[in-house]
Length: 261
Image (cartoon, rainbow, N blue to C red; front, side, top):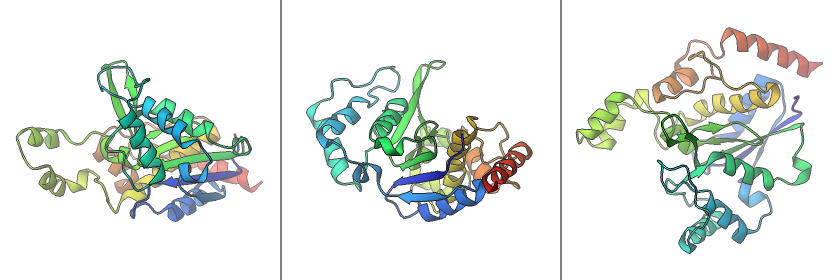
């Protein structure tokens, strides 16, 4: 599928996400024009009451149970309503089902924007996850690929696991704040200046999937690698001596040449 335009919806509302820099990176990497759009829910017409109920209904209530929240309580709906009217209001760690959340975004795209030529990426603070049938629990994710693809800045912090040492010291009663300062090289935290650099790789994963239908890379040094550990995420996106593995570097060269023709 050949995208004629990448639309980057910035719903993060933070100081460490620089959407203009991300758009420039994607445009240069894929030779596809990239446009920055504003907060998704405030720039796309919706029924606030209905959308609030829909968002509340796809919350994960118990991380160990494969069920959502089909009959949300009024306070849950009211909170979603307030969050929609005030984009600066955080979701307080609420976990949403990634598939249903993606569906909501898709449903609220105007028909004219649902095109095979348009690659939509939503940058959001919403924390979403998927059910893992292997260990029977929900897992927070940094990215979910689809139409549109969703990338969560909260998921960058809460999705990939921190080091085993971090969890052991946490159980031993060490202050989480001091732990984060001590282990900053191997983990990312809220408000981290490295956020945009890391987001470049995740947005590249979304565009690459849209164009080729191929998801992620097994090479831990490639920016298309979907890391399960924070230290691996930082390595792939910041510390690796190369940007893309040899296979994907050649594939990207081919895609750029196609874009020139």
